[in-house]
Image (cartoon, rainbow, N blue to C red; front, side, top):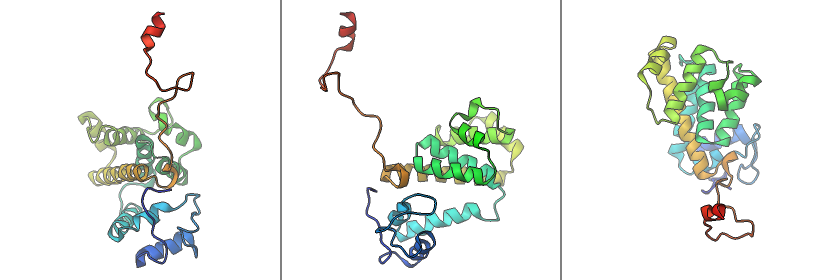
Length: 212
């Protein structure tokens, strides 16, 4: 379950109620969760706690889908899916793997996203955008001049700004999804202490054991 409370249909603000109707039909998404894409849908029900945040987030989705964008959807999706992978959000990564196929990427390319740098299935502009995404999401915006110059060889300044904004936004979404345990990110942290062979958690001098 999400770490925050959810807003049911009755108590959602008017715009959220319209979105609920689009995503969940006649169901109350809290009592009967589930979207057509297979997710629980609790991203929406949690964000509805703060109507302004819900509206702002939804406007962001409308921004990147607008016909006014210079950045092609195919290139946009590379930033979104790689951001999901880098942040470690199962939800964002999984959803945008599907979106990548929708905009024309092959199964081979989708499978290559986690280790993109060792695969030859990318066009030059795709490769530089994946590298730029890693700078945005792993290096927190530290971008070498040579990489940025290569980016400007392929895209207009407007398209670069759009890509930067959308990719950084999705890194935020991925981070929030993990922190609040939304959707597919409602999982326990895999990095935990394991007991020794006797089921104990007592301290062990491993090097002393090796010496003996």
